[in-house]
Image (cartoon, rainbow, N blue to C red):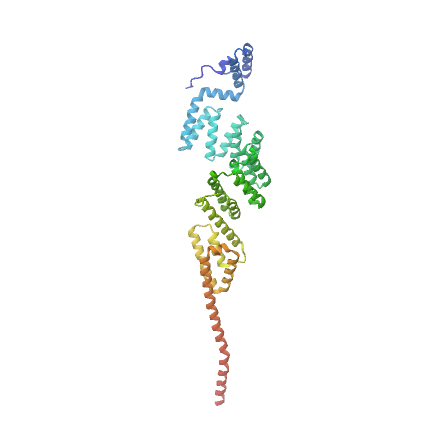
Length: 426
């Protein structure tokens, strides 16, 4: 059943039927405007203009008609979808589809549906909704930014870049657009454009403050990754200067998240540099963040040595295998224990056969990898002691064999003399 319509409609204002064509609307408007005196009745004059502007635009007219006839029902469906969103996303989506089918020209159900589709990772359908909405309001900055994000999660970097540049053409001071462009440039290795985009975001308001923290952190990461030490030092100072005292913990949380990203990709050197850059940031002595920072600095330095050891061709055999399992193996604990047991058994065989070689490798390890040596002092000390004991045992064996060999020639003349005497007696 059709809902109750407004008492006076825009069609009534122009005194036309709801099926009137554009030409009829224009004729009715000009006829009424000629009879109206704006100075005496400005409100009526504005009503005529509003009615004409709405009804001659097919999109606005469709939206108006659908709002009059189904607006309240659409609002109910959207409200029901909002309530169902958390407990039953599929039901929410069904309600929104019904609202769109009932009023296809209304933007609100489509906006809500696009957000829900993004949340459900149905990016292609979300893109379709955002495109429809942008055709209706092409200068909507928020919609362009959302469409760009939708492109990015689908791996459509060129489309996202084009959308973001269109957004910056509308508003060159759009902070999120600059950061999203920086994300695209980073993924494509376009370092100079990445730096320009980040600096553009930072200087958008001409003042560096905590609002620029994210962009400054990204800029610091770029310089760390490119090995640009002077800019690393300068950007570190800029970054620390925008952190107020009451935001220190929040900033450290962001630093830790970035460091963890570096560590997951085995970039321990980059993470280590970033942690060192945060050391001037004042933290209370008993702060968990301070203790965590120091632990991560030590651990990342240790991991850098482990990476070097992994590439070291001078260190071979079971010792190398043991440290690879200890520091570089990302398998489950059970698998690591099995591999460590195998490596240690092989190590025992090696020092039983050639303890001198093991001792030489231990000396090289202590000299080249001091952090690993200090971390594994007990293990290395025990191994060194066993190798020395084995070397002493083998040297004693060798000495005994040499002594036995030295006595052998003295017995031979005595034996040959006895045989000669026996032959003479016969």
